[in-house]
Length: 304
Length: 254
Image (tube, rainbow over all chains, first blue to last red; front, side):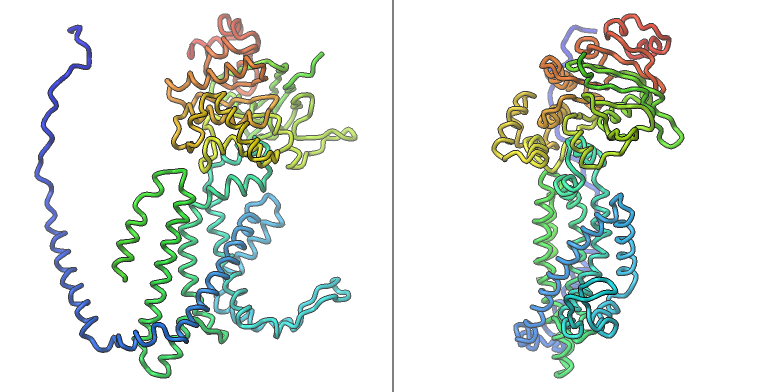
């Protein structure tokens, strides 16, 4: 053993220069995909059945834009009902109060367990079941009453049907998010003297958002397309408008392309929005921001 | 005679069929630092959590500053306190956890400001000044805008101590505050605790740091299998333990 210090200056070895592993399979796959893509792109231009002039003619036409407007309104309002309702249901479900917990469970059981289209029709024909709804003393006098038949317009029925159904699904998403937060957070908040509601609002929910947002984005995109079910009660939106047009002029493919392109545009916009919301709630952990938007840009670039 | 800050009499607690606490007694006077040591599973952390009612007790009496914790006595009967009343009792009792439990979505400053803002409705400016003063006290004023994930374990635990102090508690509970830390970070947390003890804070500290217990503690409690085996002056207990179990434990950790 010498007395020399452990850290001695030594020559740094040459950087490793090795022959990388070759991937001939990848190159072959790229070649095949490139040929298929070229064929597809070629068909887009040469196949007259796509009817691009018809697509262009209807893309910004009044009926399509009107349908688009309804799709957006229904999606936004239904998701607001769904998210607020879902949070309320999830909090009720996790509450130590057995009454609230059972009510929430029953709601979710019913609205997830029956088809959405049946719920829409049910709300629309509610007047057949209860012609008037009133506020008063049970089994006693009524003070205010509404005529269900006139109040239950297709629009109101759509919102109730889509919104309440969504609330049932959102409640499970929110519940998963709330339960994903470390129990130590509850304890720390309790030890500081925060009430249950304050703990939920200030500590638990903001952390749960990171788990809640991705599936909520999914739900919103689903909702965008589920709104087309409103055709069942005579309401209209983007897809219904396209269908109405092609049932008259028989240009089925071009009009479905119009609708599909609009859906893709809306979905892309939503994905960008989701990226920023996720970034906001993930701001405390650097690793969460990663390459998401990069990944999105590539996917989005390919669709446009 | 002064009212003891903590007065625990015959505390019993079971989890299912396992009786974790089997009659624990402890009295801590205002300004005292009581250190609780013992092997893992001895019930020391559970006992600490009973003091601020994070765990309910099955039998016995827990008083903090003369007030019954978690219950109210009326008409010769015990009545459970409402959640809001329990929350109010906890405001006077600060707690520091083994795993820090900082709020990860808030900066160090926001962590310290949270309880005064939300619970005591302190104006933002005032809460901010108080929080900055507390962060300076634990030596972290320059890290006030960092998120917990950007701080070392020792720094996080110091922020957690500042957060607990923000509610101006009369009593501080420490649940193995240095057990999750890398060895070289233990010292900075103990320094803060030492300063806190010197300022006259009443503290109950569950710890494995025998040096801290000897130096700062006014009282040392050795717990094993849910009972207090030996209690007394830390220097005496550590140098000449009377009970066999205390001797066996200390021979392993010292």
